[in-house]
Image (cartoon, rainbow, N blue to C red; front, side, top):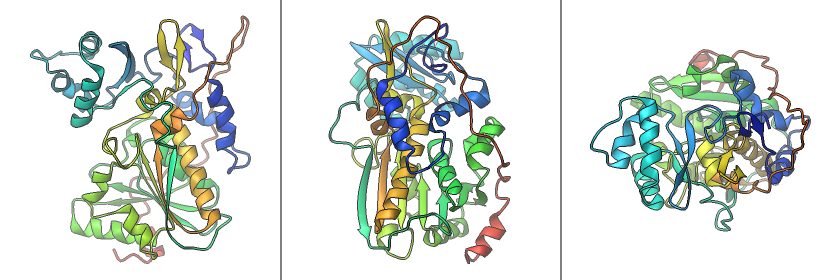
Length: 385
Protein backbone atom coordinates (compact mmCIF):
# COMPACT_ATOMS: atom_id res chain seq x y z
CA UNK A 1 0.00 0.00 0.00
CA UNK A 2 3.01 2.29 0.35
CA UNK A 3 3.23 2.02 -3.44
CA UNK A 4 -0.47 1.94 -4.38
CA UNK A 5 -2.81 4.94 -4.35
CA UNK A 6 -2.66 8.71 -4.28
CA UNK A 7 0.43 10.34 -2.74
CA UNK A 8 -1.55 11.22 0.38
CA UNK A 9 -3.97 8.28 0.40
CA UNK A 10 -3.10 4.59 0.17
CA UNK A 11 -5.41 2.16 -1.59
CA UNK A 12 -5.74 -1.52 -0.86
CA UNK A 13 -3.97 -3.74 -3.41
CA UNK A 14 -5.98 -6.09 -5.62
CA UNK A 15 -7.13 -9.20 -3.79
CA UNK A 16 -5.85 -11.43 -6.58
CA UNK A 17 -2.34 -10.08 -6.17
CA UNK A 18 -2.20 -10.85 -2.47
CA UNK A 19 -3.62 -14.34 -3.00
CA UNK A 20 -1.29 -15.07 -5.88
CA UNK A 21 2.07 -13.89 -4.56
CA UNK A 22 2.38 -16.65 -1.98
CA UNK A 23 1.33 -19.26 -4.53
CA UNK A 24 4.02 -18.09 -6.95
CA UNK A 25 6.66 -18.30 -4.21
CA UNK A 26 5.99 -21.94 -3.24
CA UNK A 27 8.94 -23.35 -5.26
CA UNK A 28 11.28 -21.21 -3.13
CA UNK A 29 10.81 -22.01 0.58
CA UNK A 30 11.60 -19.15 2.91
CA UNK A 31 11.40 -16.49 0.20
CA UNK A 32 9.86 -13.19 1.34
CA UNK A 33 7.78 -12.88 -1.81
CA UNK A 34 6.06 -9.68 -0.75
CA UNK A 35 9.44 -7.97 -0.43
CA UNK A 36 10.09 -8.63 -4.12
CA UNK A 37 7.31 -6.22 -5.05
CA UNK A 38 8.80 -3.30 -3.16
CA UNK A 39 12.53 -3.83 -3.00
CA UNK A 40 13.41 -1.50 -5.87
CA UNK A 41 11.30 1.19 -4.21
CA UNK A 42 12.94 0.48 -0.86
CA UNK A 43 16.44 0.84 -2.29
CA UNK A 44 15.60 3.89 -4.42
CA UNK A 45 13.37 5.71 -1.94
CA UNK A 46 10.24 5.54 -4.13
CA UNK A 47 6.66 6.08 -2.95
CA UNK A 48 3.17 6.01 -4.45
CA UNK A 49 2.33 8.76 -6.97
CA UNK A 50 -1.21 8.01 -8.11
CA UNK A 51 -1.57 7.98 -11.89
CA UNK A 52 2.18 8.56 -12.29
CA UNK A 53 4.29 5.46 -11.72
CA UNK A 54 6.49 5.24 -8.64
CA UNK A 55 9.57 5.62 -10.82
CA UNK A 56 8.03 8.58 -12.67
CA UNK A 57 8.45 7.36 -16.26
CA UNK A 58 4.94 6.00 -16.92
CA UNK A 59 1.54 7.68 -16.71
CA UNK A 60 -2.07 6.56 -16.88
CA UNK A 61 -3.93 8.95 -19.18
CA UNK A 62 -7.50 9.13 -20.41
CA UNK A 63 -8.01 8.09 -24.03
CA UNK A 64 -11.38 7.67 -25.71
CA UNK A 65 -13.70 5.92 -23.29
CA UNK A 66 -10.83 4.29 -21.41
CA UNK A 67 -7.26 4.85 -20.28
CA UNK A 68 -3.78 4.25 -21.65
CA UNK A 69 -0.44 3.61 -19.99
CA UNK A 70 2.39 5.50 -21.67
CA UNK A 71 6.01 4.85 -20.69
CA UNK A 72 8.67 7.36 -21.67
CA UNK A 73 11.56 5.84 -19.74
CA UNK A 74 14.32 6.29 -22.32
CA UNK A 75 15.60 9.39 -24.09
CA UNK A 76 14.61 7.83 -27.41
CA UNK A 77 11.04 7.39 -26.15
CA UNK A 78 10.72 11.14 -25.61
CA UNK A 79 12.25 11.73 -29.04
CA UNK A 80 9.71 9.44 -30.75
CA UNK A 81 6.63 11.19 -29.36
CA UNK A 82 6.31 13.65 -32.28
CA UNK A 83 6.41 10.79 -34.80
CA UNK A 84 3.95 8.76 -32.72
CA UNK A 85 1.42 11.59 -32.47
CA UNK A 86 2.18 13.08 -35.93
CA UNK A 87 3.05 16.48 -34.51
CA UNK A 88 4.09 19.42 -36.66
CA UNK A 89 5.71 21.22 -33.73
CA UNK A 90 8.06 19.43 -31.36
CA UNK A 91 7.82 19.91 -27.55
CA UNK A 92 11.15 20.97 -26.07
CA UNK A 93 10.89 19.82 -22.46
CA UNK A 94 9.66 16.75 -20.60
CA UNK A 95 6.70 18.60 -19.00
CA UNK A 96 5.70 19.92 -22.43
CA UNK A 97 5.93 16.42 -23.91
CA UNK A 98 3.68 14.96 -21.21
CA UNK A 99 1.19 17.82 -21.54
CA UNK A 100 1.03 17.29 -25.29
CA UNK A 101 0.62 13.52 -24.94
CA UNK A 102 -2.23 13.93 -22.43
CA UNK A 103 -4.05 16.37 -24.73
CA UNK A 104 -3.61 14.34 -27.91
CA UNK A 105 -4.72 11.06 -26.30
CA UNK A 106 -8.18 12.54 -25.70
CA UNK A 107 -8.47 13.35 -29.41
CA UNK A 108 -7.15 10.17 -31.06
CA UNK A 109 -8.43 6.61 -31.42
CA UNK A 110 -6.69 4.46 -28.74
CA UNK A 111 -6.44 1.40 -31.00
CA UNK A 112 -4.68 3.45 -33.68
CA UNK A 113 -2.39 4.99 -31.09
CA UNK A 114 -1.39 1.55 -29.79
CA UNK A 115 -0.70 0.28 -33.28
CA UNK A 116 1.47 3.29 -34.16
CA UNK A 117 3.35 2.88 -30.86
CA UNK A 118 3.98 -0.79 -31.63
CA UNK A 119 5.37 0.03 -35.06
CA UNK A 120 7.90 2.56 -33.75
CA UNK A 121 8.78 0.70 -30.54
CA UNK A 122 7.10 2.83 -27.88
CA UNK A 123 5.90 1.05 -24.70
CA UNK A 124 2.22 1.99 -24.76
CA UNK A 125 -0.83 -0.07 -23.74
CA UNK A 126 -4.56 0.27 -23.27
CA UNK A 127 -5.45 -0.40 -19.64
CA UNK A 128 -6.94 -3.87 -19.37
CA UNK A 129 -6.38 -4.84 -23.00
CA UNK A 130 -4.93 -8.22 -21.97
CA UNK A 131 -7.29 -8.80 -19.02
CA UNK A 132 -9.70 -11.70 -19.13
CA UNK A 133 -8.21 -13.21 -22.27
CA UNK A 134 -8.44 -16.99 -22.31
CA UNK A 135 -6.18 -17.15 -25.35
CA UNK A 136 -3.04 -16.34 -23.37
CA UNK A 137 -1.92 -18.05 -20.17
CA UNK A 138 0.91 -16.50 -18.12
CA UNK A 139 3.29 -19.28 -19.19
CA UNK A 140 2.97 -21.22 -22.45
CA UNK A 141 4.97 -24.45 -22.27
CA UNK A 142 6.32 -26.38 -25.25
CA UNK A 143 7.98 -29.74 -24.60
CA UNK A 144 10.61 -30.20 -27.30
CA UNK A 145 12.54 -33.25 -26.17
CA UNK A 146 13.33 -35.69 -23.38
CA UNK A 147 15.56 -35.34 -20.33
CA UNK A 148 15.59 -36.89 -16.88
CA UNK A 149 13.79 -35.02 -14.07
CA UNK A 150 15.82 -32.81 -11.74
CA UNK A 151 14.68 -31.96 -8.21
CA UNK A 152 17.37 -29.41 -7.41
CA UNK A 153 19.50 -26.74 -9.06
CA UNK A 154 22.88 -27.85 -7.75
CA UNK A 155 25.40 -28.20 -10.56
CA UNK A 156 23.15 -26.66 -13.21
CA UNK A 157 24.49 -23.80 -15.35
CA UNK A 158 22.18 -20.89 -16.16
CA UNK A 159 23.10 -18.45 -18.92
CA UNK A 160 21.25 -15.21 -18.21
CA UNK A 161 20.99 -13.00 -21.30
CA UNK A 162 18.38 -10.70 -19.78
CA UNK A 163 18.57 -7.15 -18.44
CA UNK A 164 16.78 -4.72 -16.12
CA UNK A 165 14.44 -6.52 -13.67
CA UNK A 166 12.20 -9.48 -14.55
CA UNK A 167 14.82 -11.72 -16.19
CA UNK A 168 17.62 -10.85 -13.75
CA UNK A 169 15.28 -11.61 -10.83
CA UNK A 170 14.53 -15.02 -12.36
CA UNK A 171 18.27 -15.69 -12.58
CA UNK A 172 18.83 -14.44 -9.04
CA UNK A 173 16.21 -16.82 -7.62
CA UNK A 174 17.76 -19.76 -9.49
CA UNK A 175 21.21 -18.78 -8.22
CA UNK A 176 19.96 -18.69 -4.64
CA UNK A 177 18.42 -22.12 -5.24
CA UNK A 178 21.88 -23.51 -6.06
CA UNK A 179 22.48 -22.96 -9.78
CA UNK A 180 25.61 -21.39 -11.25
CA UNK A 181 24.34 -18.32 -13.09
CA UNK A 182 26.39 -16.55 -15.75
CA UNK A 183 25.22 -13.08 -16.69
CA UNK A 184 26.11 -12.37 -20.34
CA UNK A 185 26.16 -8.78 -21.60
CA UNK A 186 27.21 -6.92 -24.71
CA UNK A 187 30.26 -4.72 -24.33
CA UNK A 188 28.50 -2.14 -26.52
CA UNK A 189 25.12 -2.29 -24.73
CA UNK A 190 25.46 -3.67 -21.20
CA UNK A 191 22.48 -4.06 -18.87
CA UNK A 192 20.97 -0.58 -18.48
CA UNK A 193 20.41 -1.32 -14.79
CA UNK A 194 24.16 -0.86 -14.27
CA UNK A 195 23.50 2.88 -14.63
CA UNK A 196 20.85 2.81 -11.90
CA UNK A 197 20.91 2.33 -8.16
CA UNK A 198 23.94 0.17 -7.33
CA UNK A 199 22.30 -1.63 -4.40
CA UNK A 200 19.40 -2.80 -6.55
CA UNK A 201 21.72 -4.05 -9.30
CA UNK A 202 23.80 -5.88 -6.68
CA UNK A 203 20.66 -7.45 -5.19
CA UNK A 204 19.66 -8.99 -8.54
CA UNK A 205 23.13 -9.83 -9.85
CA UNK A 206 25.43 -10.26 -6.86
CA UNK A 207 25.08 -14.06 -6.97
CA UNK A 208 26.14 -14.28 -10.64
CA UNK A 209 29.31 -14.34 -12.70
CA UNK A 210 29.78 -11.70 -15.41
CA UNK A 211 30.73 -12.35 -19.03
CA UNK A 212 30.97 -9.50 -21.54
CA UNK A 213 31.15 -10.14 -25.30
CA UNK A 214 31.63 -7.99 -28.37
CA UNK A 215 28.41 -9.01 -30.09
CA UNK A 216 29.19 -6.86 -33.11
CA UNK A 217 31.97 -9.30 -34.00
CA UNK A 218 31.68 -12.83 -35.38
CA UNK A 219 34.02 -13.99 -32.64
CA UNK A 220 31.74 -12.66 -29.91
CA UNK A 221 28.64 -14.19 -31.49
CA UNK A 222 30.45 -17.53 -31.82
CA UNK A 223 31.23 -17.50 -28.10
CA UNK A 224 27.61 -16.60 -27.36
CA UNK A 225 26.46 -19.70 -29.26
CA UNK A 226 28.97 -21.82 -27.35
CA UNK A 227 27.73 -20.48 -24.02
CA UNK A 228 24.14 -21.28 -24.96
CA UNK A 229 25.14 -24.84 -25.90
CA UNK A 230 26.92 -25.25 -22.55
CA UNK A 231 23.91 -24.12 -20.50
CA UNK A 232 21.28 -26.22 -18.78
CA UNK A 233 18.97 -23.20 -18.62
CA UNK A 234 18.85 -20.01 -20.71
CA UNK A 235 17.01 -16.87 -19.62
CA UNK A 236 16.35 -14.11 -22.12
CA UNK A 237 13.99 -11.15 -22.23
CA UNK A 238 14.39 -10.04 -25.83
CA UNK A 239 11.97 -9.65 -28.64
CA UNK A 240 12.36 -12.65 -31.03
CA UNK A 241 13.96 -10.56 -33.77
CA UNK A 242 16.76 -9.55 -31.39
CA UNK A 243 17.78 -13.20 -30.99
CA UNK A 244 17.45 -13.81 -34.71
CA UNK A 245 20.10 -11.22 -35.51
CA UNK A 246 22.59 -13.40 -33.62
CA UNK A 247 21.43 -16.56 -35.38
CA UNK A 248 19.78 -17.94 -32.24
CA UNK A 249 16.46 -19.77 -32.27
CA UNK A 250 15.14 -20.81 -28.85
CA UNK A 251 13.10 -23.73 -30.13
CA UNK A 252 15.95 -25.13 -32.21
CA UNK A 253 18.40 -24.77 -29.32
CA UNK A 254 16.18 -26.78 -26.96
CA UNK A 255 15.08 -29.37 -29.50
CA UNK A 256 18.69 -30.10 -30.51
CA UNK A 257 19.05 -32.17 -27.36
CA UNK A 258 22.65 -31.10 -26.75
CA UNK A 259 22.03 -27.63 -25.34
CA UNK A 260 19.69 -26.13 -22.74
CA UNK A 261 17.05 -28.28 -21.06
CA UNK A 262 14.92 -25.20 -20.36
CA UNK A 263 14.75 -21.93 -22.26
CA UNK A 264 12.92 -19.13 -20.42
CA UNK A 265 11.71 -16.41 -22.79
CA UNK A 266 10.24 -13.30 -21.13
CA UNK A 267 8.40 -10.74 -23.25
CA UNK A 268 5.73 -8.12 -22.74
CA UNK A 269 2.98 -9.93 -24.62
CA UNK A 270 4.37 -13.34 -25.60
CA UNK A 271 6.95 -14.41 -28.15
CA UNK A 272 4.49 -15.19 -30.95
CA UNK A 273 1.63 -13.36 -32.65
CA UNK A 274 1.07 -9.65 -33.17
CA UNK A 275 2.40 -8.73 -29.75
CA UNK A 276 5.73 -10.54 -30.15
CA UNK A 277 7.69 -7.42 -31.03
CA UNK A 278 5.89 -4.94 -28.78
CA UNK A 279 8.12 -3.11 -26.31
CA UNK A 280 6.94 -3.29 -22.70
CA UNK A 281 8.15 -2.30 -19.25
CA UNK A 282 6.80 -3.29 -15.86
CA UNK A 283 4.30 -0.47 -15.38
CA UNK A 284 2.67 -0.48 -18.82
CA UNK A 285 2.61 -4.30 -19.02
CA UNK A 286 0.84 -4.45 -15.66
CA UNK A 287 -1.69 -1.87 -16.85
CA UNK A 288 -2.29 -3.88 -20.03
CA UNK A 289 -3.13 -6.86 -17.83
CA UNK A 290 -5.52 -4.76 -15.78
CA UNK A 291 -3.38 -4.91 -12.65
CA UNK A 292 -4.15 -1.38 -11.47
CA UNK A 293 -6.02 0.17 -8.55
CA UNK A 294 -9.37 1.52 -9.66
CA UNK A 295 -10.96 4.65 -8.20
CA UNK A 296 -14.01 6.69 -9.20
CA UNK A 297 -11.65 8.94 -11.16
CA UNK A 298 -9.94 6.11 -13.01
CA UNK A 299 -6.96 3.76 -12.53
CA UNK A 300 -3.91 4.36 -10.36
CA UNK A 301 -0.68 2.41 -10.44
CA UNK A 302 -0.51 -0.73 -8.34
CA UNK A 303 2.92 -1.10 -6.72
CA UNK A 304 6.17 -0.23 -8.55
CA UNK A 305 6.48 -1.70 -12.06
CA UNK A 306 4.73 -4.72 -10.58
CA UNK A 307 4.80 -6.84 -13.74
CA UNK A 308 8.59 -7.09 -13.44
CA UNK A 309 8.94 -8.83 -10.06
CA UNK A 310 5.79 -10.89 -10.65
CA UNK A 311 7.10 -12.13 -14.00
CA UNK A 312 10.57 -12.86 -12.65
CA UNK A 313 9.06 -14.95 -9.85
CA UNK A 314 6.64 -16.68 -12.23
CA UNK A 315 9.41 -17.52 -14.70
CA UNK A 316 11.70 -18.93 -12.01
CA UNK A 317 8.92 -21.10 -10.60
CA UNK A 318 7.98 -22.36 -14.06
CA UNK A 319 11.63 -23.28 -14.67
CA UNK A 320 11.77 -25.29 -11.42
CA UNK A 321 8.54 -27.09 -12.35
CA UNK A 322 9.83 -27.88 -15.85
CA UNK A 323 13.02 -29.42 -14.47
CA UNK A 324 11.09 -31.54 -11.97
CA UNK A 325 8.78 -32.87 -14.67
CA UNK A 326 11.63 -33.95 -16.93
CA UNK A 327 11.91 -33.19 -20.62
CA UNK A 328 13.23 -30.22 -22.56
CA UNK A 329 11.11 -27.09 -22.47
CA UNK A 330 10.59 -23.71 -24.09
CA UNK A 331 8.76 -21.46 -21.60
CA UNK A 332 7.05 -18.43 -23.11
CA UNK A 333 6.31 -15.99 -20.25
CA UNK A 334 4.19 -12.89 -20.89
CA UNK A 335 4.38 -9.96 -18.48
CA UNK A 336 0.91 -8.73 -19.40
CA UNK A 337 -0.61 -12.21 -18.99
CA UNK A 338 1.11 -12.75 -15.64
CA UNK A 339 -0.42 -9.46 -14.47
CA UNK A 340 -3.85 -10.32 -15.85
CA UNK A 341 -3.92 -13.49 -13.78
CA UNK A 342 -3.61 -11.56 -10.51
CA UNK A 343 -6.28 -8.88 -10.79
CA UNK A 344 -9.19 -8.59 -8.41
CA UNK A 345 -11.15 -6.15 -6.25
CA UNK A 346 -9.16 -3.87 -3.99
CA UNK A 347 -8.74 -5.01 -0.42
CA UNK A 348 -10.59 -2.66 1.96
CA UNK A 349 -8.82 -0.07 4.08
CA UNK A 350 -9.84 1.67 7.28
CA UNK A 351 -9.01 4.85 9.16
CA UNK A 352 -5.99 4.63 11.40
CA UNK A 353 -4.33 2.02 9.16
CA UNK A 354 -0.54 2.15 9.43
CA UNK A 355 1.15 1.55 6.08
CA UNK A 356 4.55 -0.11 6.32
CA UNK A 357 7.37 1.17 4.16
CA UNK A 358 8.59 -1.19 1.42
CA UNK A 359 11.58 -3.35 2.29
CA UNK A 360 14.14 -5.38 0.39
CA UNK A 361 15.97 -8.64 0.84
CA UNK A 362 19.48 -8.08 2.23
CA UNK A 363 22.15 -7.16 -0.31
CA UNK A 364 24.89 -9.65 0.56
CA UNK A 365 27.18 -9.57 -2.48
CA UNK A 366 28.48 -6.95 -4.87
CA UNK A 367 27.81 -7.74 -8.52
CA UNK A 368 30.95 -8.28 -10.62
CA UNK A 369 32.19 -5.50 -12.84
CA UNK A 370 31.20 -5.83 -16.49
CA UNK A 371 33.00 -8.88 -17.89
CA UNK A 372 34.96 -9.41 -14.70
CA UNK A 373 34.65 -13.21 -14.91
CA UNK A 374 34.83 -13.68 -18.68
CA UNK A 375 38.10 -15.58 -18.94
CA UNK A 376 37.41 -17.76 -15.90
CA UNK A 377 33.88 -18.68 -16.99
CA UNK A 378 34.91 -19.56 -20.52
CA UNK A 379 37.68 -21.76 -19.17
CA UNK A 380 35.42 -23.47 -16.62
CA UNK A 381 32.77 -24.20 -19.26
CA UNK A 382 35.30 -25.34 -21.83
CA UNK A 383 34.41 -22.57 -24.26
CA UNK A 384 37.23 -21.66 -26.63
CA UNK A 385 37.86 -17.91 -26.30
